[in-house]
Image (tube, rainbow, N blue to C red; front, side, top):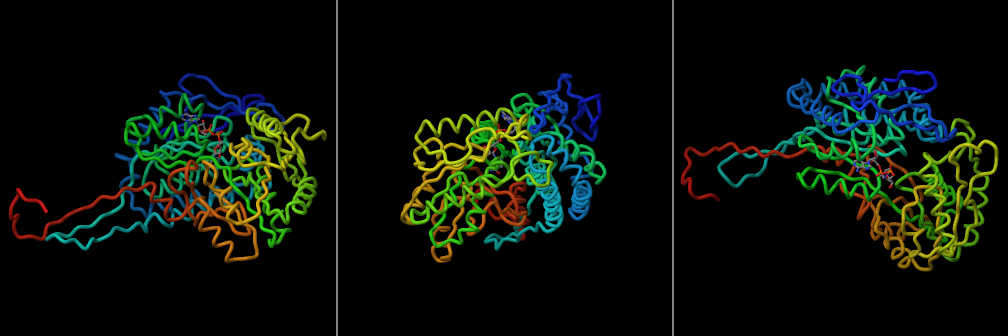
Amino acid sequence: MMVETGELTKLQMYIGGEWVAPSGGEYIESVDPFTAKPWALVPRGNAQDADRAIRAADAAFRDGPWGRMHPSDRGVIIHRLGTLIEKHADELAEIEVRDNGRLLAEMRHQIRYVAKWYYYYAGLADKIEGVVHPCDKPALSFSRSEPLGVCVGIVPWNAPLLLFSLKAAPALAAGNTLVMKPAEHTSATALKLMELVEEAGFPPGVVNVVTGYGKEVGEPLVTHPLTRHLGFTGSTATGAYLYSLAAKDVKRASLELGGKSPNIVFSDANLDNAVRGVVGGIFGATGQTCIAGSRLLLHRKVHDEFVDRLTAFTKAARVGDPRNERTQIGPIANQMQYERVLDYVRIAQNEGADLVLGGKRPEHDECARGFFVEPTIFTGVHNEMRIAREEVFGPVLSTIVFDEPEEAIAIANDSEFGLAAGVWTSDMKLALRMSDRLQAGSVWINTYRDISYTTPFGGYKQSGIGRENGIEGIREYLQTKAVWISTAEEIANPFVIG
Ligand code: NAD
């Protein structure tokens, strides 16, 4: 719930079906990255708030109507939430833009698309079937899938409502209850969504949102003894740390982490499309996506022409006010990230990479106040450089030359990450051979940055564990119970098993 208090909007957390103030009474300012001014006050939750939320979710799971509800009826409520999200998409988009500076036009589209996650998983809720096993004993043995209990979701700031929903929709459809923690910079849409959760008819405690800093309120959610699953999206360092905390109590975890994804362009590619795909891959969302195609691997034959075309196309992109329909690249979402991106520009220059475009704040008036960085292109990058190995999470592209497909594969796979890869060629045999060899959870051929609720998404190597989306996505939130019913007349020898 949002309360207008003069200039700033004061937000409240949503726990056990009630709107609550943080028990410590403190708030964090949420800053609009276009104006660089605070616009909202986000409750600074703590361990006490985390405990209250987990207990509410646990009570809703064990004692509330949610656990006893037929999956078809749960599906109806989840579907209703989808329709409410569509109905309120423009309002949610406005809030998201205020929080993280993503383009309003893109967010209006993205939030309508978010509704599809709820429709898809609402439909799956009553299609989770058990299995009768071909048992070798005088018994009927069957297994069924059951929810885990209280699931905690911790998400970052780059696509708050989408990343929230990738976890919430399957977790709820599987019959679990939820405590979500959005990023401290971007909590407003998750809280607005709770108004829609109420309207959709979720029983109290089924969906809860606590807000605040990771260390103060996120960590107590993960370590709480009643938590059964952690769904985390964020940086690899935080994910690995939280995974170690979850492991202490043998809690299940799915992790969607960072990337340094290669976009590989062969000389026979449709270069117009490849330029658009590469630009969308690294400058879309101002480069702040885990799947950013931040390493451009260019075949030597096409290198100079491609860099020229790419530079010309990027130069023409309009950087500015995310609410302006004509803007194509908005600001960086927060000051810390803005400084980090500029640091990486300096690191790349010190390493000897050639700056061919950008690398600084845009000079025009519209970008005077916010956290803006020009779209930036480096050439002459080698895969050993930090700019090719570390995730920048901003509009910075590194170009690397290759001669042979084998060399492209070796460079692409020489990374601790393995989230995504793009291949641009007209030769489908080559494209398929590449897709076989690339160590990445998603491989896009002649396209980039496509995701869908139908298609599994996740990382190889340090980009993550588990999959979101599709039928695999709901499996993360289920556990298997085997049931045995004896068909024997008598138990022959109780001391011999087998
Ligand atoms: P982050 O890891 O700093 O924060 C992510 C979330 O974790 C935030 O909600 C934060 O408050 C919380 N958090 C931080 N420390 C915590 C702690 N000790 N205990 C509990 N919670 C804690 O990441 P970020 O910088 O906000 O987000 C950017 C990162 O997210 C990038 O590395 C990006 O690649 C990754 N990302 C991955 C995907 C994916 O699906 N693979 C999608 C989007 C973003």
